[in-house]
Structure formats: structure tokens, C-alpha cells
Image 1 (cartoon, rainbow, N blue to C red):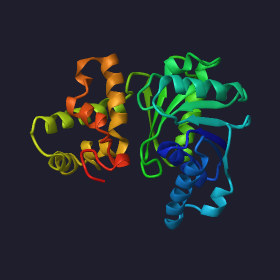
Image 2: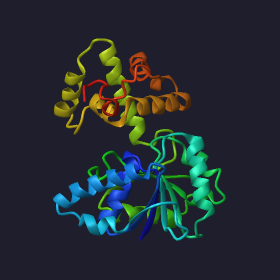
Image 3: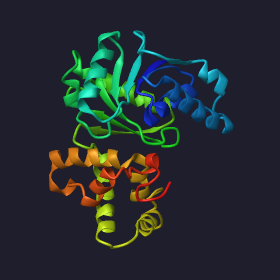
Image 4: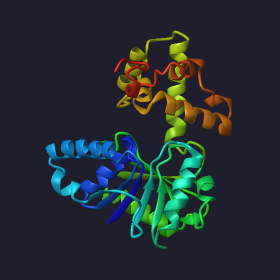
Length: 269
């Protein structure tokens, strides 16, 4: 299969990696191409150490460049900026064949609103991968009122092809995973803000008490507190006061304490 990924950051590189390990030909469109190639190479090196792929052979199927016109699937994985997503999706659609599927990896933005800018909105679907993509087993497939059954079945096929489990969610702010995950994360931040418990103890309570693989505060650091704030603001605007970002989250983002990528969030990294 010929796959194109638009965006070579942590998520886009991870998406490219998992398709490469399954034998696909992958093009990654990313201005900082060398940085994206390094991320993918590092990921493939880890996959090779686990016996999942041949790194050299997989890299031979990787191209850094523009979306090719014969791509069968295009996955957009640029930052959560609606205008940017619309721009890259519309540009990709203009050069694709009639049977190609367009997917967005957005974790919260409306698929229908993004699709409204396309000439064929029915072929845009949400394929929400989770970080880190090679490890996480879930794909959230997000459909709209105009998603044809054939496009949904192709999306299910991509999940099966990657060895991942798919859940299907109708287009709604935050879908299922972000809506629930962000709400839990925001409440955990409020608990820190109110002095209920330390971040470490809150996270331990959720990992040992509820079996979560990672506590909500450490997860927020991993995702990026700036990303978490942007999603919370979007959900607050769409769904109301229960998603209002805590003042502590705003202060941390304003201070540049964004989590792992800045070296400090609720934890030191």
C-alpha cells in the first residue's frame, strides 16, 4: 500500500513507522525533513531490536517529500490548528486520485467542519492514533453523517493491517477518548491546585487503584501541557464549563513548563 503522512512530528513519525513496519511504501511531507527522518529511523531501530522489522529495508520504502498523486491513504498529522489542517487537507485532496482516502489524526477537532472545506467531504475520516503510536494498540475511527460504509470499512482495514484495535465514534467534540481523558486530566490538575495530593500520589492512585497504564498528570506531561490546554479550551467552547482549563494549567503553559518536551511540567524530565 502507498501511504502519505503530512507532518513529521512525534505523531506523524510514529504513524509513518507503523506503516513501514507492515511493508508499506510511505511518503512523509514535513518541512523539517531531516529531523523527521531521524525520528523514524530511531523508531525503526527500536522495532528492529524487537524483531519487528528490518530497518534498512523499511527505510528503503520511506520517501521524504510531497504527497504523491498515487497515494491510497493520506494521514494528516499537523498541529491542532483548524486553519492549518484545512489548508494541508485541501492541498492534498487536489492532487489525489478519486479512490484515495483522506484521514486526519486530530484528537478533538470536528471532522465535519474540516471536511466542509473539501470538494469531496465524504472521504475524510478521523484516524486518531495514540502516543506513542508504535506501542499504543488503539485507533479511534471518527465518522460523520456522510461517511460512506465503504470508507469506514477501509478505515477498519487499516487498523487491522497495523495490528491495532479500532473503536468507531460519531463526530463530536473530543470524540470519546479525548473527551474522557481530558476531563480526567483537568480534574487531576485541579486536585494539585487545591492541595489534595501531589502529582505523584494522584498518578499512583490511578495506576494502582484503577489499572491505568499511566497517571493523568504524567500523561499530560507526555502529550504536552500546551496541547492539553488547547484541547481543553476547544472543548470548553463547545461543551461548556466542565472543561474550563484550571488556572494552574494556564500558569504552567505561560511559564513554558510544557512537560517532557520542555524538560518540566508536573514532573522533571
